[in-house]
Amino acid sequence: MRNKIILACLSCLIWVACTDQSIYTPKPRSFPKINYPTKSFKDFEENYCNFSFRMPAYFDIQKDTSFFEAKPENECWFNLYVEEFDCTLYCNYLEVGKNKSFDEIKTDAFNISDYHNKRATYIDELLLKNEFGAEGIAFEIEGPVASHYQFYLTDSLQEHFFRASLYFNAQAKPDSLRPMLDFVKEDLDSIIYTFKWN
Image 1 (spheres, one colour):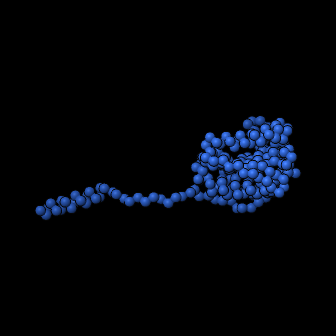
Image 2 (cartoon, helix red, strand yellow; image 1 turned 90 degrees about the vertical axis):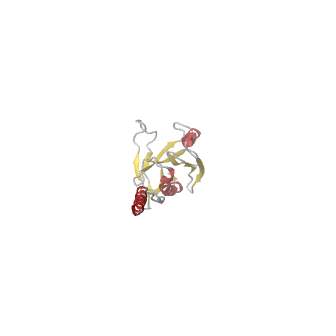
Image 3 (cartoon, one colour; image 1 turned 180 degrees about the vertical axis):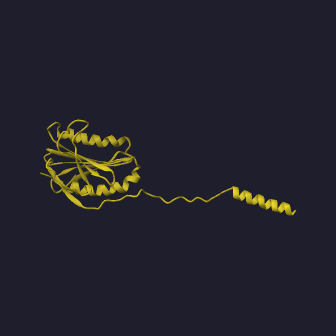
């Protein structure tokens, strides 16, 4: 009888030891660590463009020298690069009437933002106007798209056209990019609302 009790206890101990039923708890939600740049501003007054604006100091200006192995349409094509986020604001200027009419250039801007409709969940168009006579439209694009923010600005006579598109060099989910996108978008307002045609 004593052997049967010892054998039963050993069997129970072996069974408990072999059936590891650890209790798993979900890990807390986490986001990638982001090193935000210091918020400060500087003037964009490059001699190859006929406009100026205040821009975040953490943007590096990179002048475009080629466009698909050809020369850019205008000397005033440049990029504003943010190293901390590996994102670029692609900027170009077009003189209305030189190669295309205002309506053609404006239609191109809408077509470029509409191209994201394939994957976008929502596109919001916001009217822009500043105290220096620049006006246009911003496109806020939601969903797993390449560019989440684009805008264009023109003058009241519709002789000049400036267009910008923000791209992150990442295939991350929109939720992961959201903190960086919000940070940059807030500072892009400084470009829009201080933009002046010379």
